[in-house]
Image (cartoon, rainbow, N blue to C red):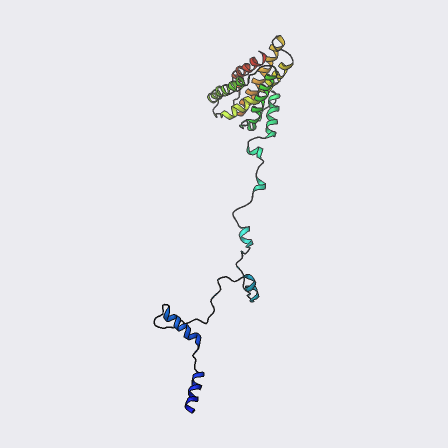
Length: 254
């Protein structure tokens, strides 16, 4: 009986379990013919993603990856925001109302000395405005002459540009010649405005046209002689200018 009791005690004190027996049986039946047991690690697997709530509650006192502000970098950066220092849009386009007004006053007063530094600028805003005004006043007088106005202006500027480059030592650009001749077209606009109200085909109209031609040619020659330092050559420059403005006078009178 003592022997049976010892066997019973040994049986109950063994590590045998039914789960292990089933696991061994399944391993042998489904691909583990040697009966090897799988060793399960008791260590927990690392989590693939830890929510910020859990990391905050875990007592983590480190610093997250956040950009730091470096004042020295921004103060010494090569980039400087110069948007407030940019010139106005009209100046970038070459439109300066102050210079336009000064050139207009110089043309209206042939006896006033011209400022050569201003007259050498290739400002075409005023000339385009006066050409459009001349065509518009001729249109109001019943004459559609926009093509003739632009065509004679371009050809006349080419001729006088070539002439001035031959006469002066410094030379002149085509834009400067077009600018000066366009501004000096203002008295012709006044003559064409008079043609709206009464006819110029008579003695009074002829005398008015001659006066306007002399006015335009003297203003243009004065500006060219002062800008190109052509002393004593104003009358020589005024003659071809008078021929050009005479064509515009013919369009206005007839």
